[in-house]
Length: 219
Ligand code: DX5
Ligand code: ZN
Image 1 (cartoon, rainbow, N blue to C red):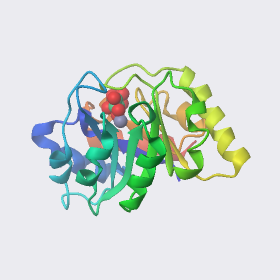
Image 2: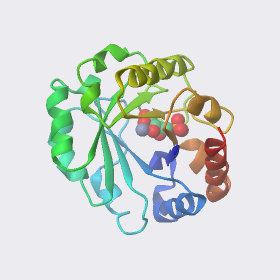
Image 3: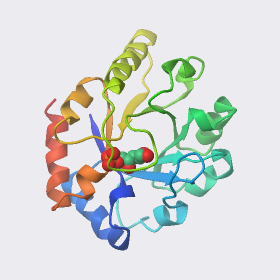
Image 4: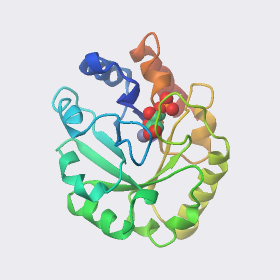
């Protein structure tokens, strides 16, 4: 089953609960939570308290994407009964294996993310330990950027690694997804599609979510 994870980075922060209710009604599977620290990426978004303000206001699980330095210092803050995934960047982790084990020890699924220019080879000695690999299809830091097409080939290569090694981690793509390219993205082997501006900047968020979901299920 393919999943849609709208990113609340592009939501109206003053109406966050309403925006999230709209994606839930539209059939989204996860809430993608983009956390930026102004160091690892050139932007600051929000922290765990904003995410926690949604607890109980929605049934959708949290898909936490930490674009921060020293993620180990903050992992516990993001663990709630609704947290399904916590993803860290390989580029931000000196001891990636330790960080992945730390996430798992907290009882949530562990993801590792790679920037567009980071080679899949960084996964060689960790891929068996992760529940999810998040491939960035824009340079992280901002919503509303253009999809980087070379990530499609990278996705196909990663899906082939998964098949050849008999692994079952999920593959997520993040950045620049639109109604026009989402089927090509899913066809490359993606399980979870993040969409921020294409969902939350739409005139009707619930309707746009439904359009994304129907495109994804019909690949
Ligand atoms: C980028 C974030 C993305 C972003 C996606 O740093 O990780 O999740 O919000 O937004 P769109 O879909 O607008 O590219
Ligand atoms: Zn993200």
